[in-house]
Image 1 (cartoon, one colour):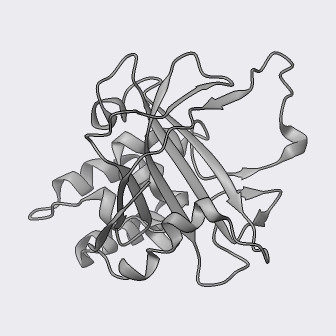
Image 2 (cartoon, one colour):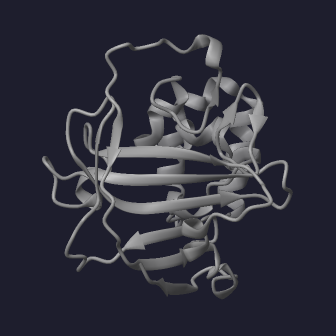
Image 3 (cartoon, rainbow, N blue to C red):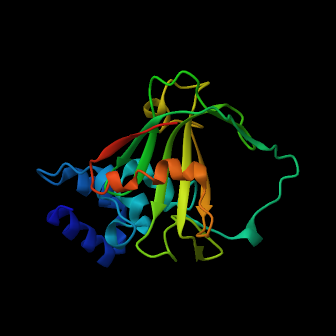
Length: 218
């Protein structure tokens, strides 16, 4: 992260009353062109506690609404007896696994003929499956982005799709109302491997460094 930007952010930590001006100051720093998609982290002054402060498009994260990741507390969840089962089509797809430097991301090929749709549950539209984000840590006891009752899982798989009924692609939908759906699957360590998951994990050794990518067959 640029040292000037880091110093400005430290000032905001010391002077809470200046937080309202953080976005304006960051935008006006001469010569700095920050890419929020590249330098956010999971700790420190660029961690989750500050995501809602450093980018105007993420301001909802600072208001306790529509934010992710969170600690899910089961006792505070409301049961919806009318919630429908979630449905995911079972078509096979091919794609490419990318190392972004922060996550491993599987993206479906653009020329896929038979797309996988996500529907049901609380969704009022059909969402076209587009990406899988795979999160894991350096320790088996901590790797998931989300927590459940304060517990961190060894890993987390996040499935994303865009609203195919309102938008044409993920780029168009990502900042729009009801544009994106995300499903999280918590990963536990066991003795029996998952054969479907192995299709992707077997290629991890080919994307060890940022910028590397490998084609993953269906």
